[in-house]
Length: 313
Image (cartoon, rainbow, N blue to C red; front, side, top):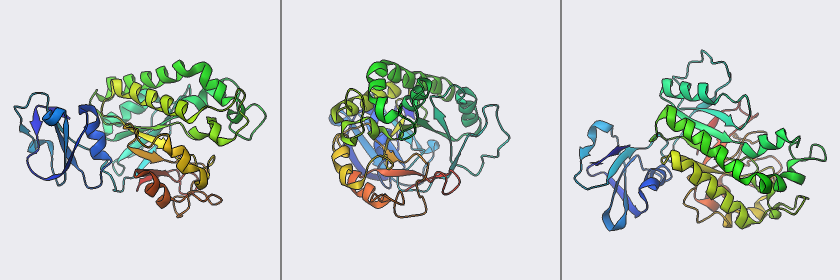
């Protein structure tokens, strides 16, 4: 993204939004490939479509304006893979659009991963599993495995460590900004099975599950912490197909529907079926129903079903 610049013509549409949200709005809009933000009417994002490069940008005398090209245009196929080795690797990433990793574990390859992303010119796509790994540190298993699990003590884990969770995301974003640059576009996939901590889930959480309003507030605090260091970060909301069926999904989504911090929705692997219309074999939720409900494009991690690769729908 560059300051005091404009891309002439090729207008798709325009919308009122803040400077920091313009890149995300373009990334989430079908057909949008690049954008210009100006102070017109207290902030307008001009969405554009067509083949373009940074050399097509022209100087703008409009104070505070900026323009950019999105790394992840909506409704387009993107092919990526995980970063497999904390010690580095000789993988040829030239055929991929992005590289993924997990955030939160002690041996997650944070710095070496980000340097790999930078050296290859790819986009960083990061699974934020701070709560899950924090639970592992406190000897909590994943749900339905043992009596002390995230489905019984996860809500209290969040209550007691909310500030730590948010500050951890902030630290990851700061590290990414230092290595990739503060204007880099990085994608953060927030907390697999986020729904399982909520009261709506019906899980026997000690001290009761967290309210939908609390979960929305936590999500926005995490997103805002990330964007304080990486203003062009794109944020994804977890579908949680293991924890929620289609009948409850609209109620759960209702707490997040008007958030300006959600650019994509995603699954997080396991037994998600990227080669089926249903997200899980024993769940009513389908890829198309989730798109219809949320209006968001999907990061579909096929998990164990198709070799851990992802695609954008």
